[in-house]
Each structure stands twice: as structure tokens, then as C-alpha cells.
Length: 467
Ligand SMILES: Cc1ncc(COP(=O)(O)O)c(C=O)c1O
Image 1: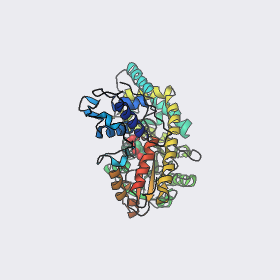
Image 2: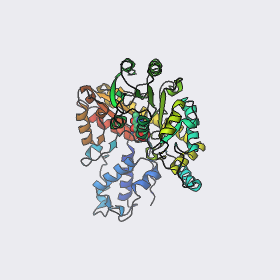
Image 3: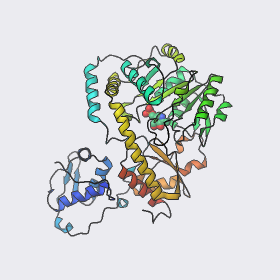
Image 4: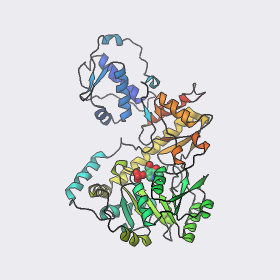
């Protein structure tokens, strides 16, 4: 069965509520009859081009009111109702999300999710299928499929100003795999590695497991303290200069130059993680550190997790030419761990220029979501919070006044909005760390973002009159 309600994104009424009302009316006016099977959540979200949460919230409300019935392993059905006509004259109250069943998450600001509504699934499936047709089903080259490395090489030159050859690129199954390779390549066991504090805990875990001594580098208003690095015994420093993770600042050019100078003078290495460099919404694009690296001290890390899909598990590193031979010798006995089929499919996707188009579409899409997030925060939360790192990327932090993050996270859950604590990103958490919450918005629709912030605002004391 196909349902085609007229949903209007520009209306103040959230989409899930419009959908709920429409289906309810169809049932009450006998156009949808008891015993009819409803489309699955997935079918309907694809058909209506809305998010999963929108359909789920509408279906859940209809189920809790007895209009729909979910039968395990069978589907969702229009329920048998005793006196459907009773509903006809009732004044319709939009279901308040606050009245949701306990523990139901209606809006989840989880970091790491990406937009799937505009994902070019058809084109990607075609590339996967073509890759299988072309694949010779053998191992790929140790550093990764040549065709993919060539595409990445072109892409990096055009979009990130990184001048390199495909020979310098190594394909990896994720940023953590890249870090583990670097530790072995540079023989960092028992050596000091400097890491932004707060910084990406996923990288810190690998460094610890590889036996590195971690030197947490305090952050200043404009990124990591280069003064601290200059007095450190670090052999390498891991840094997110384009968009500090998780605080979001951009490392200014003066600090980049000083960091490069430190590396040149001490023979240290800079590990630059450019994980979401594609998504910058304000100001000039900032060139990567790798593009300034004349003395071959920067190892650049890239990933397809934000720009494409986290589930392809495709990342890469760019080695300075001076480390390429060393890499080949050191890892001569290691096979490439990313499937050649996935690598080839990605190469085809990039060759067909679909990747470029996808990035352009996503940049616009994320910019709209980002604007909606900032607007909603200003509107609903006003001066009760301070935004941190709001110029780029797929997440922001909020510093909350007069309440701890853990309290807000807890009361948010009661209202169905899930936000996160960035506490884990501190190696040595300071008390201030508990005044931040983290909001990832990549996977949410604009309506969900607005609704999520509204719900969050209703949790803050003195926010009863807001929204
Ligand atoms: C700082 C940082 N680097 C890299 C990544 C991506 O890691 P991967 O390539 O393993 O998906 C993330 C994702 O959460 C991140 O936050």
C-alpha cells in the first residue's frame, strides 16, 4: 500500500505530527480499513523522503492510541476499533512529544551519524555491482587499489591543497587503523606522543594500546598550545587543525607554522587528522597543514566516514615521500585489510564524479541543518548556553550555565531527547568538562533538530516559558 500525504516542511507543525494526523484521519474516515497492512517504516520514509524518526514517531503515537497494531514478524496493521466514529468530533490536540512512553528517544543528537536522505543509493549500488563485475577476486595491492589511490590523490589536490602522489597513499580500514600503522612505522612504543586535551578518545586508546606515553596538550582559545609542545619530549603530535575535536576551533596559520618549525627542528612528526575538513560553513577554507609541509614532517589522515559513509570503513593516510620506502619495508608481510571490492566501488564512484556532487550536496544540506541548529539554540536556549565550535563540522558543543551536563542529559532523556557528554575526550577531566554537552546533527532532519532543541530547552530551569 502506498500512502501519499501532503507534508509541508515549512509549517510550524512538525512533520511527524502532520503524518500522524493524516493517517489518523484516513482511518477515521474509513479510507484505511481495519486489517489493512501499513507500509513498513523504511518503505514509508523512503517514499515520503522523510527521516526514520518522523515515521517512527507518527506510527508510535498511532499505536499507543490504538489506531495501528504492530505484529512481530508480520508488520504494522490498521487495528480493529470498536467505535471509530467516536473520534470524529474530537478536538484534535497534536500529540505532545513530552507524552511519549518512558525511555523512548525521539530525537538523538548522536555524533557520528550522517545524512542519509540525500544519499545517492542508486549510484552507489551501481558502483558496487560494477566493481563486482570488474573484480578479479584476488588480493589488492598492499597499500590499496591503485585506482582508488589515484582518485584520492586528485581529490586531495583539488579540495585540500595537498600535493602528493598515489604512491604516498595507504588505504586503511578506519582512522584507528591508520594510527596503529603510524605507531609501528615511527616506532613510537615507549615514546612520547602529544595529544590535544580534550581530544579524540578513539585515537588516545590506540596510542595507549601501542605503548605510547601520552602527553596531553592543553587547548588555548585558538587551539593547542604550541608553547607546551616546544617544551615536550614528544616524537609526534596528533592534531585536528581544521576543526579541533571536540571543541571545534580552527588552528590559525601562525600556530601551524610554529608547529611545523618545531617538527623540523626536533625531527618530530605531525599527525594531521582532517576528519571533516569538507564541511566548513563560515570564512575562507583553511588549507591543510599537509599543504604547508615543505620538510616532510606531516602525516595526513583522511576518512570517508563523514564525507561518504561510516559503514564503508574507508580511510587513508598520506605519507611524506621520505617514509614511503620505510613503509614498504616495514609492512612487506602485511596484506591490505580493506576489501578490494569496496575500494574499487569507491574508485568508480569518484571517477563518475558522483563523489564530488555528493560532497557539494552534503555541504549545502549540512549548512542548512547547521543554521537550523544555531537558530533553534538562539531561539529556545538563548543566553542559558554558550555555543562552542560552531563554524564547521557535524557537531557543536554547548556550555550550559547553572546546571551540570549530567543533569541535563538525564532530564533530556525523560523528555525523549538524547544529548551526550564530551567528558570522555578529556584524558584528565576537569570540573569544567561537566558543563558541556555535545550535539551531533548530521543524521537529523531540520524538524528533528528544532524539536530536539525545543525539548532540551524545556528541561532547563526557568525555561518553562520558552517556545
Ligand atoms: C576526530 C575524528 N577523527 C576521525 C574520525 C573517523 O574515524 P574513522 O575513519 O575510523 O571512521 C572521527 C569520527 O568520529 C573523529 O571524530
